[in-house]
Amino acid sequence: MLERPLKPRNAVPYYSNGARDDAMQMQFLRAWFGYWGDSAKNPVSDVYDGPMIDMRYSHIWAWDTRPYPAFPLRDDTWSDGENYARGHWLSGRAAAQPLSAMFLKFARAQACRILMSVVFMMWCQGISA
Image 1: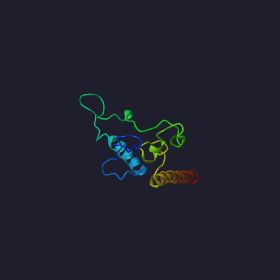
Image 2 (image 1 turned 120 degrees about the vertical axis):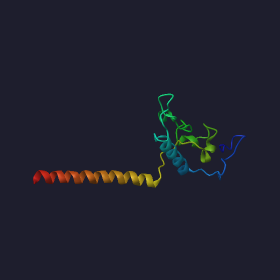
Image 3 (image 1 turned 180 degrees about the horizontal axis):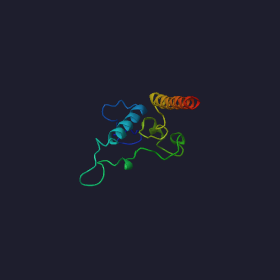
Image 4 (image 1 turned 180 degrees about the vertical axis):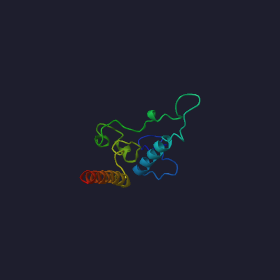
């Protein structure tokens, strides 16, 4: 069920208030790829040589190839631009990472730099000793 004001069969998903929630969409994708990417939960079949769900062929259906932000802003070109505000498209949204993810990435990069600096200093001290 998708909310599409321009379509006659317009509805929101069960238990939804109809608001767009980019964070929830991102969490769903993390959960999906995290769960099925785990070989313990996605075992290799005894019948054929491959997992139940081959994640190499798992694609996100709702990617819109129209150029963001021209779509949805160019209503003279695309008539469904008003659906974007509450739609399920990923275009222009997938790069919007939660602050926690950005912080974790930064912290990991910094920890790696600090560790490399400490190892280098220890190595230099070993040479001069």
